[in-house]
Every structure is written in structure tokens, then in C-alpha cells.
Image 1 (cartoon, rainbow, N blue to C red):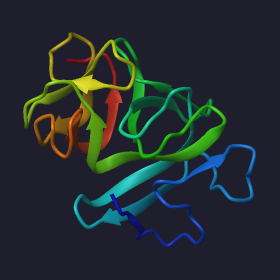
Image 2: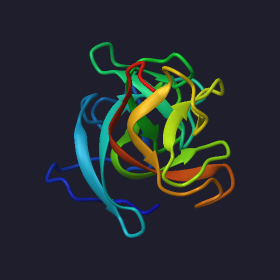
Image 3: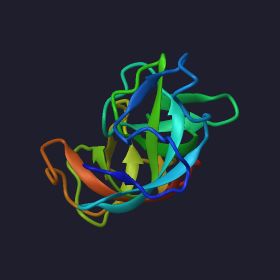
Length: 164
């Protein structure tokens, strides 16, 4: 993924960048939203958030903008969801995708299926589990596209609100 900035803000880090959370001079404020464009996946919207332990590219997280926290999504999670764009550990900050086509860590999924959290932290699937649907997200490819263990989802400010 080769995203380039399309937002008008100056000095935003690259989509794949992570910055130590203590290095405030280089990072935007937590909660900053910006647009970036990729030649394959098109334009997406991203939010700058604090990381959490074990976060890798493609993980789905639940975030609390007020508390400034992220947690890897699992069954029973609640709150707005986003997709990690980098290895963004607990002492770091980085971009998370909230709209557009995103690549996520997935189990065995079918294209055009609904997205559900699983018991594996950060990974999603299309197996129906009551209360664990991620609304505002739908699989656009089956697993294995673009690569093994991943699928493409279409995001529109997704969240886990106990539906599905």
C-alpha cells in the first residue's frame, strides 16, 4: 500500500508511520482525521490514535477517543472500530483506517459477507456471532486476497454496538 496525503494539513506522517507517543513534536493530536489515497485501494479516511500491545498491520481495533485508548477487537468488544496501518505498539501512535477499502487480518471469509469480531484479538471473520457484528464494514474479497490471512473490507466509520 502506497498511500499519499490528500488532506490539506501540513506535516502529517505517512500512513505506514508510527511515532513514539512521547514525541509530540512530530505527531498530530490523537483523534486527528486525514485522507490519503492509494493507487490500488483508492481514497481512505484515517484517524491518528495511540497504539496497544501486539498491534500489527491489518488488526481491527476498538478505540475510545475520549480516553485516548485502543484495544484489539475481540468478541464482546464495544465502540468505534478501525484498522491498524502499522505495527503500533502501546508506547506508539499511528494511523488507523476508518473509511474506504482496507486490508484486514481475516479467517476464512466470503466476498460480500458481513464482518464479525472473533475470539482471536484483532482478527475478523464472517461467521455469524450474535452481538459481535462490526457495522459499517463488509468483506469485498474472500480471504487470500490480497494475500494469505487477509481480505479486503469496505469501511464506513465502523463500530461494534452489540448488533448482528
